[in-house]
Image 1 (cartoon, one colour):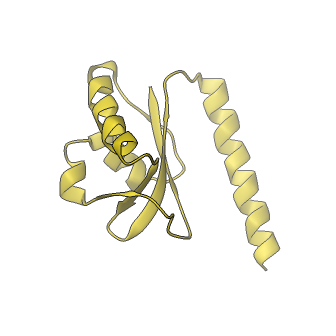
Image 2: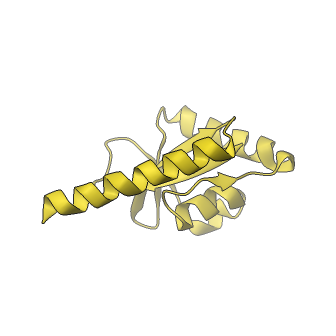
Length: 104
């Protein structure tokens, strides 16, 4: 299982708010928020912990979270192989590069 948090430039309409103390209970979600855009591998012994976090966000019917005045889209992937991980991360880098060029 992998988790990722993508930093948002604008606040979403609906989100679940957490502070860093709240995220101490969910260390892999916290790591994802501290390293936006990167997949964080969750060891099998912590899958239940991630599922619990997912239940909290699904109660608010959103995958968006707010942590210390920053907004993220929270993504959880159950199955992902190394090739897909490499491909997705490289694709995201290309999009960020082109977005920066468009803005300038």
